[in-house]
Image (cartoon, rainbow, N blue to C red; front, side):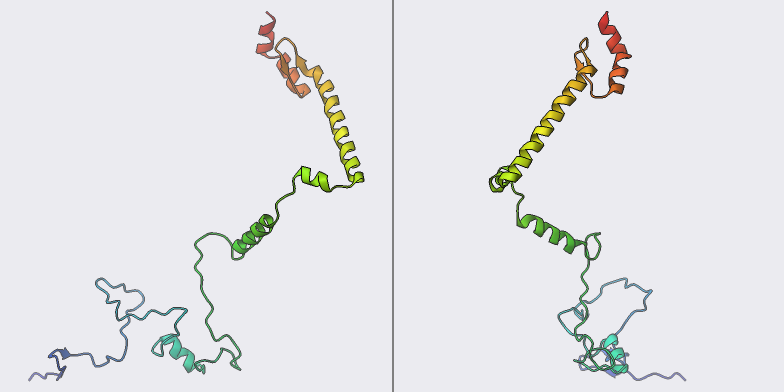
Length: 180
């Protein structure tokens, strides 16, 4: 004796062995599909559309007492909209891009004044201070030139800035072979 299980017949003539058409089919986490996946039947959630009531997360929230349109929290005072997730394409930190943008905007907002523009706006006292500073710098440069004259090799026609460089040159092969 063999028993047969009666099957439902659709109007188009196909057998229906699956009684739970209401439930969505899901694969276990460790199984990957190995063939064609019908993407027309797949619902994709996004930040612009709300979760459908068939979503497992939606149902879990309802089990915990959440009602649609209310915020999370004991008094429903929390956020109503989900927190946006922005995928970062760079390797910067969370606030680094904003910090860089702020720095660039502040530095580009006003250009650095030229020396000639500064001189036009300076007072007579500031001009005197600037001129005395320039004179001191010129005197220092002149003194350095005189001191560095001692490190000049007339034979090789080379100027050195440091005593160690000059001594090394005097002991070098090049210097001694120029004498001959």
